[in-house]
Amino acid sequence: MNIYLGNLSYKVQESDLQEILAEYGEIASCKIIKDRETGKSRGFGFVEMPNEEEAMKLIEELNGAELDGRTVVVKEAKPRV
Image 1 (cartoon, rainbow, N blue to C red):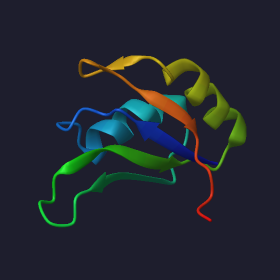
Image 2: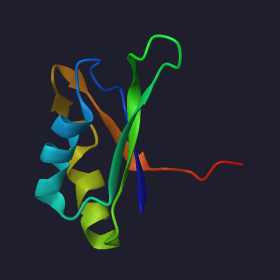
Image 3: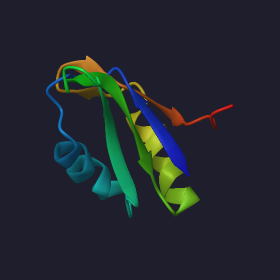
């Protein structure tokens, strides 16, 4: 399952995110979206988890939680159209 993470602190790195999310199960990939010109975080990212049960638990427990001083939005990512 592909999961969207929004309202991330601009200081959060992919390695930090992977470490936090690994508690919920296997992480296939973790990507924080960065601005093309500046290389700085845009405040959101995506995580892919192969196990749907673990992914649903992650969404339930982390959506609305506080991470590095910000309330994060965690939900299933919608496919691009």
